[in-house]
Length: 89
Image (cartoon, rainbow, N blue to C red; front, side):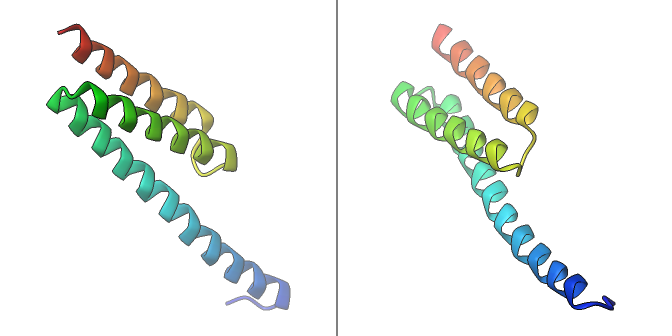
């Protein structure tokens, strides 16, 4: 258990930040699943909008430090590669 007031405050701050980060990660995962479903359905309009939302959300998450910037770039790259492969077929 925390012994000082500052340690207790840090525990409270950590809990708030963890919850906020969890919400961002959950939203990002949901958007990614939506984009993958659009790619599976081969609906070009849905792919375009879903991909745009994923790119925006991953950039914001990387900017605030929720995910690493390389992870955001890897996610965007894989999504773009899958969308391009779908469009080529």
